Image 1 (cartoon, rainbow, N blue to C red):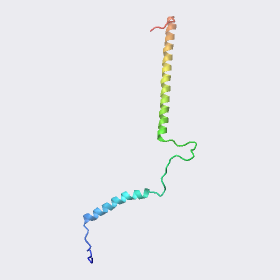
Image 2: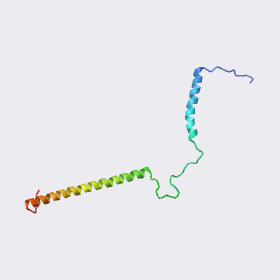
Image 3: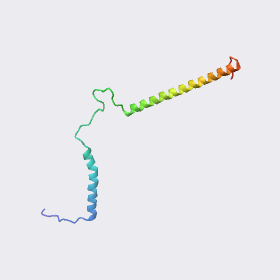
Image 4: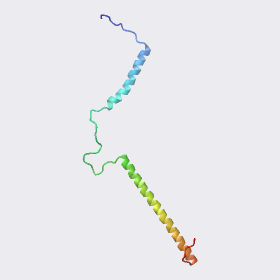
Length: 106
């Protein structure tokens, strides 16, 4: 038990490997230590008393956009069909007035 360990020489390869491991560990460990805060985790994102304008989630905003687009598309299509029908009936009326007949020709 009285044996003493003699200091050994460290080769360049071992020293570089040691510094490489230390650098890698430092890069990985330092952000984890810096990010950690003593604050407790939040359990809910909604406030206890809802305000007048609560922020909406992404899904709700996306659904509102989709609904708005569907409504605008429906209005465009119905308007287009109504204009088309008005053109057709106007065309038929002009033909009938020009021909002097009240019956529709096809």
